[in-house]
Image (cartoon, one colour):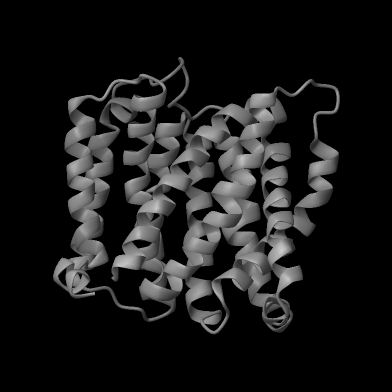
Amino acid sequence: MTKRDLIIFLTLSFMWSLSFVFYRIGVPEFGSLAFASLRVVLAGLTMLIFVLLSSENRRGIQENWKALTIVGLFSAAIPFVLFSFSARSVNAGVLAVLNASVPMMSGFIASTFFNDKLSKKQILGLVIGVIGVVILMSENLFGGRAQGSDAGSGLLPMGYALLACVGYATGANVTKNYLEHVSPVAITAGSLIIASVIMLPVAFSEFPYAKTISIKAWVSVVCIGVFSTAIALIFMNQLIKSIGPMRATSITLVIPIFAIILGYLLLGEALDTPAIIGSVVILFGTYLSLEISFKKMAKE
């Protein structure tokens, strides 16, 4: 992993940690299907700019539209809808924890279906990272209640989130194995534009026309569509091509740390002992799974 990859990894962790906050703000006002479909449509419109400005991106999309359709469905449309349903009753912190199952699923899919073997160090790092996530959110997961009486409860909403993670892991492996020759921008643009065409009818039919939507909710859906989806997926596709799907999706182990830091700095939430210990364990596990060489980075 190069220094550039590490910078992208950390930047993307921050960008995606905000998405869970946006879910909790926007879903109650827009509704699950409307919020998810608007997220996809806004992301697709953003990426349309890149397509119009580059003939290379247009050619990449035209030549690989079948694989891009699969990526658009499994990495965007379906997971966004499932997470929106989860966000109705599961708080942002627990959603981030459930999202941390993606690298394990990605590694399983890569080794089972694509013969992409993981090293013992990577497997150990992933296991340690998952243990760290459990420590990090131990109070939320095992202490009964989070924010609100039913914020962390309900197996069905959590099941939605886990199914979304299967989609992310599948999309990452398809990207690595079938779109290696396509630029990250073209992959992001093609998958999101195709997904937005599919979700556009849903956005029109499910939009809450009878309700007054607050500015805060509108800001959340615009930010999650442009910032935490379109731009973030460009970075993610670059990482997948550079370091592979399993190590790239290890980013979901770090996201809960950013979520807790943002909660502490912006919302005044408590920074307790499990949060500190869990963060240290996660960072160590992520370090192992990413096989980072600081000596190599220093030579760069």
